[in-house]
Length: 446
Image (cartoon, rainbow, N blue to C red; front, side, top):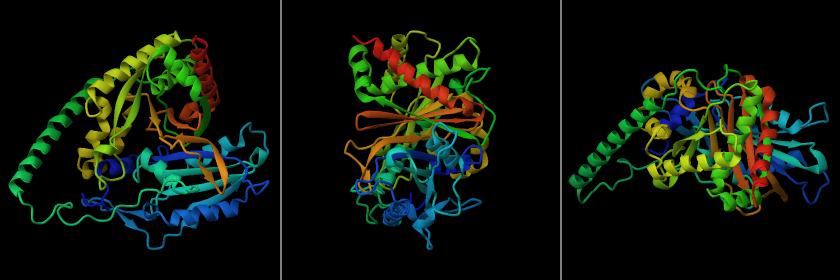
């Protein structure tokens, strides 16, 4: 596929996007005060970020729609001005307990302009002790979580360079014109196509079998443009302590913590009504299996049952571990969680005609999304100020009220909660429930 063409999965994220379901990923990074100043200079930091953004070819790309039948493509914006994508804001003391979270919730709820490169950054000052924050949003059509992290890291001090935008492939998808074995290549291509067709039919069948009966998810909500974020930092040493004592992976422990938090949260919402398991879509990166010219997204996923109906924290951890082990044994290209793989193989025109409608049925397949965004273990900084906290934010599918994104960084595991619809007034309660759920597991360690 030519490098400037959107993949079918990239197109799907564009088709889902609407004011009540913006499909951009977000991040909130909190930095210490710059070493040379008592207060951060927002304009200087913004200019520094814009200068670094200008060096990233991928951040220069804007969408060129190929309607009605031609595929969408990326093109370099000839009038690209990075400063137009970098703004500043100063929070002030108010009756809001956490002004940064309140402001980030409003800012991240606003859709990106589809006529411009699909990203924005904001420098936020006025935080206690001279700290400042960097807010970022990048559309899911431009990249997946791994790609978004690479692009954001490219804006920091001496961070790994963000991946450059791929250049156009030569005719024939990069294959040499004089193929010494054209019939062999044709045969291999036919075998690969047949294998993918069989695999896609299997995924489609699993999706049909996985559709939940009524009543649908208790996390289902009416469409709303309102969003409220919540941020929780878990101690990485405590997570490892639980893992060593009770088994599973650190990721399994995080999933069990979130299952416990959802249990507590739903009990408050349901007035003590009977709980039933929830189902989480856990995205899985397939980037290592894809080439440089594979498009912005390289994803599959697992569907993991969250045992919110189970009272004992250790039983929840064991159930989550068993569920994830079954997913891993099956692999990321089998089961209903491989929905992104199937979406990648559909023609873009199908997404334009049907994806927005089909996306409204997401609660029939999964109740929430729990994604992990990797960050390097090296210390990061901006304008010399160390990065202290890094909270990712996952977009919400239509009619879904809560999503989780997780980033391990420097001794902490940072959990970003994104709530919408009728859950926006309960984001604080859910964040508190995460902390309590973690504490309950730690108390059961020897």
